[in-house]
Image (cartoon, rainbow, N blue to C red; front, side, top):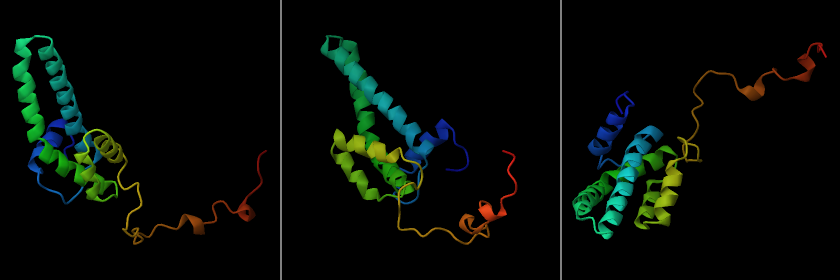
Length: 149
């Protein structure tokens, strides 16, 4: 994203980067659009239940929301692949989305992980000049002064 981390910019990025499978997506970039779409799916189910109970006015919003959710599946896959890559996993885990119930839940759990918390093939960046915490004498008992205990 371009520095702004608001809901609107996350949602615009969701649609602009629909077919982008390279790169990364942060937790915020992932969960803001996904949260909205989960809410819309719940609304579609609510209208569907109302239409089953005889409410004729509920049929139009159900089909509108359902069409919207189907159209937004493509950007959702791209976003999921980028989020999985951000967690250090392969984007191929997004194939679990084909299994609508359990597969989707597994993918959502994997995407909830923090950035690069899982092991990856990337080597750590050792170019900084900070001292190695294992080589310092900070906790060396020989350097311990008198304790006030």
